[in-house]
Length: 60
Image 1: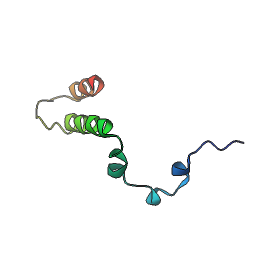
Image 2: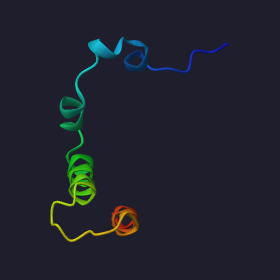
Image 3: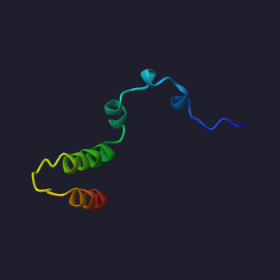
Image 4: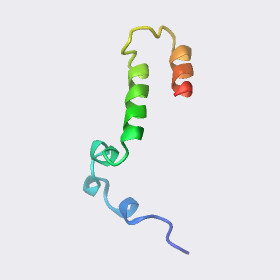
């Protein structure tokens, strides 16, 4: 059977760069993830229901 995993996927998780280091290669993705985390954590204090947070995440 043909191997489908990249070299990065084959390495032990402890040998892989941390997520924060990996996201440095993708600044737009990092910004999007930070925005979604802000919604999830209700950083603005304006999300009262989980359904509203979910809607906002989907809008991102």
